[in-house]
Image 1: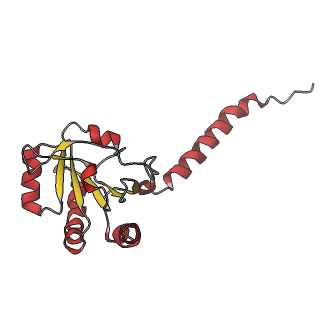
Image 2: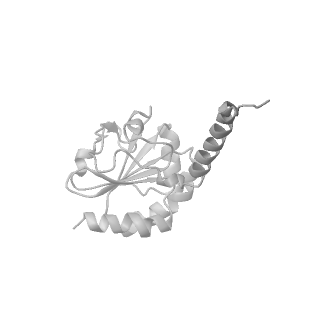
Length: 179
């Protein structure tokens, strides 16, 4: 008696092997290199209250004509403490405006945090409900965006800024955009 080979039992095996391969590829990627759909597009507009100036607001239009950084942070963010000394040093050494976006935070907590650790920001906007963060595609804090003179996002750093990211990516880009 001859038996026919039935290939249907191999389908789950191939599906499992494909899933394992897909996951292995994903686990070998750097999570800081998640591409942003906003790169080379206009920075989303907003009008938010200033943290330090009651009654004053901040809008990206105020920085038109200059290269600037938008750093999304919060007082509850552990990784923000890691990058904060780097931001302080950078803000003292460079004349690029750095706007802080205090994300889903209590203003009193943010003011205390900046008072305790130092304030590297030219201005800080309060994004209490996180809507502006959503417009910018924030995955989590901290995140930093480099915006050119025309209001176009040219770079997005996911996670804390490191000295290497600053030296290898951000500072050369800023120098190029300022020409």
